Length: 330
Image (tube, rainbow, N blue to C red; front, side, top):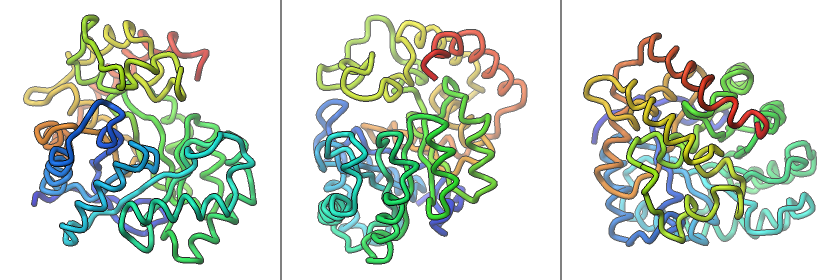
């Protein structure tokens, strides 16, 4: 196993690798993934020093959790903290975010993962009103008291939701979209999280693959891939697909971003390195569907920090190509 930098995940009190493993794709929501291939990806991540897996109870209707559970049963020595999410198994109304439902969802995730106590449970981008509900946090505290979960956090769509959650003393971590095409969290969210001792998990780090520089206008995504069916928010929040950027705009920006990669690094690794060195970030969670992708993602942790000139170039690229295109949405 390769050693990787570890950072404390906010109020969990536990350390995790600066590059984690996102597992949305293992559920099959990005196209079919065989179980053996999923195990190979998880094993490659652990071998590369990853100690943080992120999943959710709706990824493949629980398949992602089940695969992780079976893998870690075979590898009890892996030392991995598993974060899952709950809330998307019901209609998205605040009234569904109550203790009875939490217990039901929690029971399912614990069974899927094969554990008595979940390491970290995150509310999965619930309705905005949920982040301000005293009853919701009381219910989450009850789950901790019942030893169903060790800690809880939130996954958010907006910076305002993140700031509301960070103010709550029991919130251990906030998961938010952050990448070179999504800079708004740098302004207030990351500083607030640092001040409060809340961990930041950066999701959608490659803008659904745009920042890899591998896609073109002719790329065809499978019908079951959210990059085919959710480009305009048809199924869930648009920001989850290509960071909410129009595909053509994203392709042009990605081509320019690729020119910023240092010698020996891919555009994807450059994007991950950029995220890792943002003050306040705990871990970044790229997904991968192959062993090669997994190892390449993990290798970003060992890159030299990007120089200020590259950081300035990323900001300039964002201001010129991205900000105007998404300003109204954000």
